Image (cartoon, helix red, strand yellow):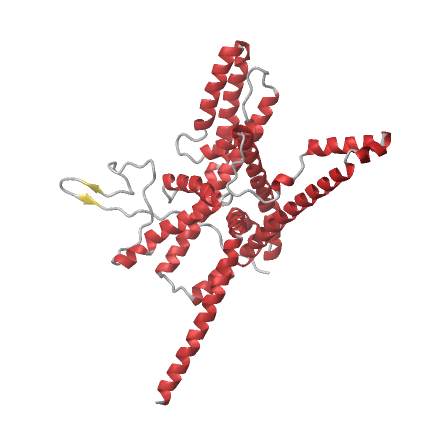
Length: 413
């Protein structure tokens, strides 16, 4: 009887603790979703900075100092590049389409005064104060001052809001880089057993996110930035009759094209070169030299340089390229600007769950490690295929994708 009462009391205590845990977990999920763009951006910066931090920590014994060096050398420049890329793309699409393409416009963004408007207003005000102060006051000067103050206050609010979000993202990156191995050790000791399905699932998610964020997205961002700068500089020497339309936008599109296998950025610059060629032949044949220069620069600088310098750092693919392209495309359309980071994250979680968790649930089938490479021939003989003939069957084992070289226990404070 006493043991039964004790068991009932413990059961009620556990129910209360579970209720408290679920409430706290729901609050964490709510806060995370409210700032999901900020947290996903921080997660992207973490995976971009992590390989560099692993190498810095081998030479710097203080983990906090190595994290700071990694943030200054990698995270901050990449963050600036991402913000600049998004702003250039939005401005280019707005100029090309005549509408605002942002799925989630930032409140108060339209209130930011343009630099030419501010200069004209300042010149008019100073000239009026020096020549005819009474006429300036009679011309509604006070109302214009009120409008200017309201615009500046709205601009300040937007700048402060963006700054807070970026600061939160940097905090997320800092503590993930410094304490990621502690979080992993706590998770293994508390929830995950050695060799369990959950452990293999989380390791696969970590490996894929490292490849997607550090490999694909970073390569696309850097390629797009290089293309935008290159095409903008090319337009400075372009003849008046043949010019690159929206050079920054088409330069950024080369980054998107770099995600497409085999074709790459040729899907962007080749049609653009044909348009420039037709324009030159129709309007000014003497401008054909610029079309040739555009093609040479596109091949040598925009196409070859990223492939030679960036592509070697991208490991073999473990996700289907078509699925990755859909994630990049649907993510921004569905979630807004941060969808370019959240879309691949959801894809990785779903795919690895299907590979590692679902087989065990439906029948104990061993988890698979992913599809063969996109350019593989299932009928060809090789080390990674099972070749069947009339009299024999040769089975081989598919190799796992290379593990990350990140070691969270390299250095400590």
